[in-house]
Image (cartoon, rainbow, N blue to C red; front, side, top):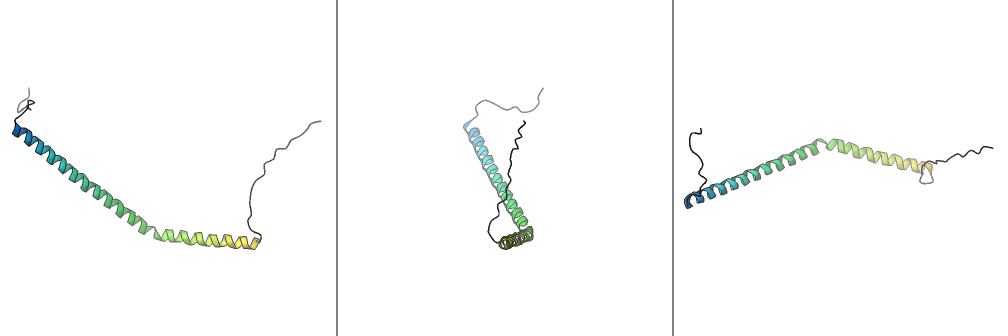
Length: 101
């Protein structure tokens, strides 16, 4: 058997209803404030992580740019040594037909 107080499910007085309404509104506002602060912390942390990663990879990005530009230069030098322009590579697939006599 339960000991102690039980919840009264009957409609309460006007003062009780107003008190319940004000407590509910206060809890909703408090929950919204905490969720806004949590969202701000998540966005700030994500931004700081992105900036840190960008800063740590700057040397790698510079090296990749240098390699791409040197590769482009060597490709253009090869094209000039060949002289005539573009080289188009491809494959030809043919079917060999044998005729029996």
